[in-house]
Each structure stands twice: as structure tokens, then as C-alpha cells.
Length: 157
Image: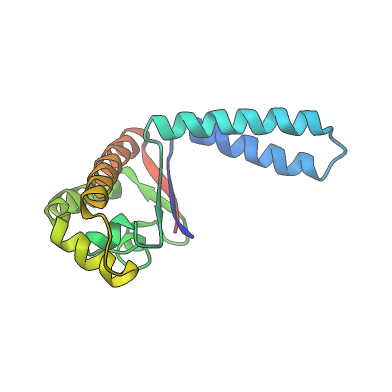
């Protein structure tokens, strides 16, 4: 389980259309070949979204970036969603970005050691995890910037 976040890009809209099409066709008499072709197109678009910072995933486990930053998806992040919706406006994406940027200093080897040893026990490779979290943080920043360009995001948290 985890948070799946999508920039409201044209690619994401196409991705949703194709997923809807796939699930509607599964209930019809459609060839396996046609479904596989649709799956390939869905995978292609998902990869394009990922490569263009239009998708971000944060698992609810030791690798969770927001937890390391002292934040969470259920209360803190959810406050930015439109009422009764999974949509976060570009304006609220800017607010999230501002807060996350202010917390970047929290990604320290000491804090990572503290968090991971609590979850995973001793013997974790702190250098590897430090690099992982720095890379993930930078990716999240780029993702939020892309969301602002695209007019917001949809969040499944």
C-alpha cells in the first residue's frame, strides 16, 4: 500500500481513458490480443508519465519520504485535497512544495538511521538509504513542480 500521485497532465487523462476502456472491454467478448495491445499502450503511457515526473509513489513502509520529513498522507497531505475529492489544485501543490522544500534539511543520515533501525533493526546501509531518500526527495520536488504546470494532481492516498 502507498500513496499514488498523478499530475493532471494530458498523458494522465489518456491513461485514465485507456484504463476505463480496458475494464469495459474485459466484460465484453474481446480477444486476448486486443487486451494485450491495450495493456502495452497503457504501460507505454505510464512509463512516459513516470519519466516526465507526472507520477509519484510513496509506499507506506520504511521507504516513505513524507514520514521521514515528519509529515503524513492521511492528515497533513489530505488537508490540501478539494472537499469530497482526490484532486489537489495547482495552488495547493505550491503550498505542499513550499513546505516540503523547507523540510529538505531533515533528510540526514542520523534521522534515517533512527527511523530505519526502529523499523528494520540494526545493520542497515545508511549511505545507500541516504542516497535513496535524497533521490526520492528530488524526484518529489520535480513531480510537484510538474503538477503546478499541469494544473494540479490527483492523489490516491
